[in-house]
Image 1 (cartoon, rainbow, N blue to C red):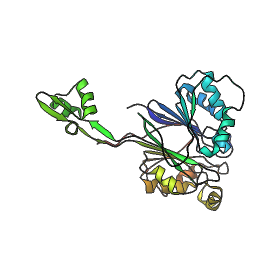
Image 2: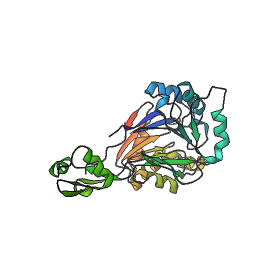
Image 3: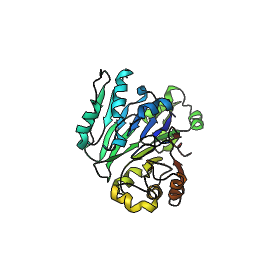
Image 4: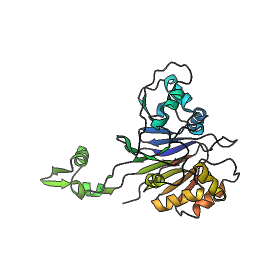
Length: 306
């Protein structure tokens, strides 16, 4: 299977710290490179992480607070500077289109890359392709915000021993996958005879929000959930007031939504001990948890064996 991993470019919330850059996350998903919420300094973090502008195929912004979008001007200009030849799609809340225009044209530059603006107007699918379906869901923050989910279609896992037994090999395997049935050796072989159902993978990205229906809709069945956990439980009232989650709430979302891997991020600078985020999430969720650090690479969990 092609590479599927999250490259963490930044994990701070409102302001960067000595150890944490502003937000920035690259999802490698086969041929797709989706950059989520590039804050200030993302271009340099990409250099440190070994990520090139040519790796990017999409930019997804959850909302227009600075720590989630002030890296956009540098990223867009870098696309042209490096001569990226393929189109790059930009998804962002339609209500902030005027902000995106200002970010896109913040300074003069020679624009040669093709950036396709695709504003998000509401819940539902916003793009589809060989990668699957990219969806958006409304969140609850101080400004309009959307989370994103990538859903791969369900497929089939081929069984090599059954293929050999029935004499299906070479190009015939691909034909069987495309058509569902082929004739070989005087008999019809159906796809169901030589394969098992394979559930498509799911990735969810949830930033700045209170608990709301959109959070759970995005997280449902996710193999990897990347979610903000700005505050700890001692500041639950403040989190609700300013439209954020606690680590415990993030853990609850993962537990109730059947998540396999929970990635906590977007940490307030007020907490010097990051282990407390893990402890609070662990009290709610007994699956795998990663407390994100800048420049981490986190593999999307492999599909369970059939």
